[in-house]
Length: 406
Ligand code: PMP
Image (cartoon, rainbow, N blue to C red; front, side):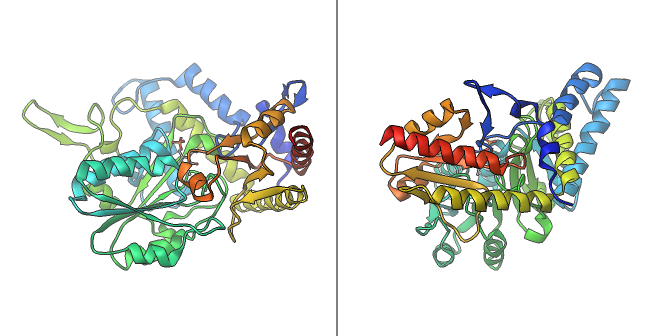
């Protein structure tokens, strides 16, 4: 099976619009993806017919919504190959998933003088929660450096490990440079010392098959909106043995077994970590997106996006003065670039007027930009619905902008 690109594009209404009288070329997929009709219809259907609060209601709608919500959990479980559905926690997104672990793990396991390791490639969402946890627990944040290509330096990582290291948190794929990190190797190294590893999978889940058991990560976090699902829903996967030990993140309805003023006992997994009325509609949208992706085959998507990356890299490098920031040996469909001395914001603004949506700036990874001593980059990031023709439009757009700005 291969990707039927015309068919896929038909599924995404947002792709068929004009921006400044030009056909939209949407290349900001690392920020968020557009949504296929099935996902949009799932939301309409849910709010038109099923909407009810779940788990507690005896009535028909509540029961229907509860079954659909728990079915979605099982679908996520099989999508990332988790051992149990109780290891799947619904959150607002990657950011909330990481904050949950930083807070709960921090409270339970981090003492003054302990260390947490992250890498120099991280998104702010995988930096700041750990800074907060370290400040709270008087612990120390250690950072693994990257090389000029934008790859984490494994030897430096090993040097940082010691008996005070309590947790390692690393991105699977860098959102700013596209580097695919050898997370399995890092996890193996960490586990030899019994150190748990959290993987920020926000940029990986839409682009390659994920098997959390094979990877053996302790926690894996991702967002629905970057994988064709609605905004406002995401996943925290955690190994049961850890989730059982961690204290709740938030208190409220749903996460309790019994409440008295003297003492409250907590619900079992996964509900212990899902306080309050859940985001049922968006969870069903996420389930719909997973079915959509799975229907096209993760391996097909991966291969197709790799061919987009190869083509775009080759074509962009033909432009004189263009340099790509981040040239890791293994990359996902993200290209960060600069042209001569042109400010990325100016380039992005002209591309926008040509109907081309790219991201400019630091991409919520300011330390990465500091590493290269640049204010930011222009970033084109691909999804399964992008085409080679769109890359040609991007390349022509960059040439035109260059001619205007230089
Ligand atoms: N980590 C990475 C690598 C990301 O790319 C992003 C989103 N840009 C996040 C974390 C945060 O995701 P969200 O804003 O959906 O919580």
